[in-house]
Structures are given as structure tokens and as C-alpha cells.
Length: 80
Image 1 (cartoon, rainbow, N blue to C red):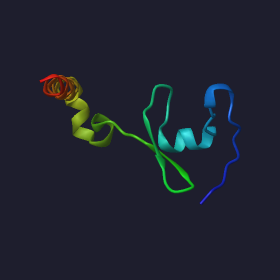
Image 2: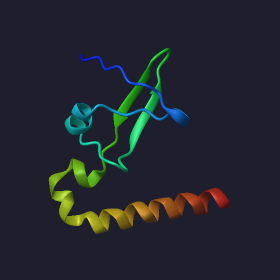
Image 3: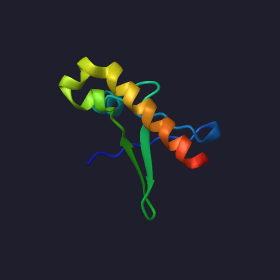
Image 4: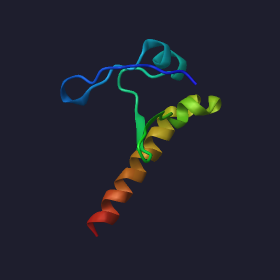
């Protein structure tokens, strides 16, 4: 386990060390999950399906369409 000291900037922003961004493939616009775990904050890189499964890269447009339809269905169900 490595330890990194970072400063909290205006509006609560922190800068992740470059070593970790590269190691976990975190780029500008990447999604991460932040978990409050009883006295600790855990930051987990969130991968997209297309990044996780090699063959899925060929079907990224289809995957994006399916995700869009799921979001639409959830909004529709919530408004009903």
C-alpha cells in the first residue's frame, strides 16, 4: 500500500498524483466512485463496459445505445 499526501483546494478539489492516474487509467472526464467507509474515504476508478471487455470495444455504439435506453426507461418509470 502506498501513501500520498494531497491538498484540498478551493471547492473541495484534489489533484490525484500522476502515478495513480496513469496506473488506473484515470483521465479528464473519468468517473470515479467515492465511498465513505466509516472514517475513511475510498476512491475507486469506475470503468466503462467498453473499457473492461476487449471485444466490447467493437460494439461501443451499441453499448452506448443500450445504456441510453436504460436511462430513458428509468426516467419513464420514475415519472409514472
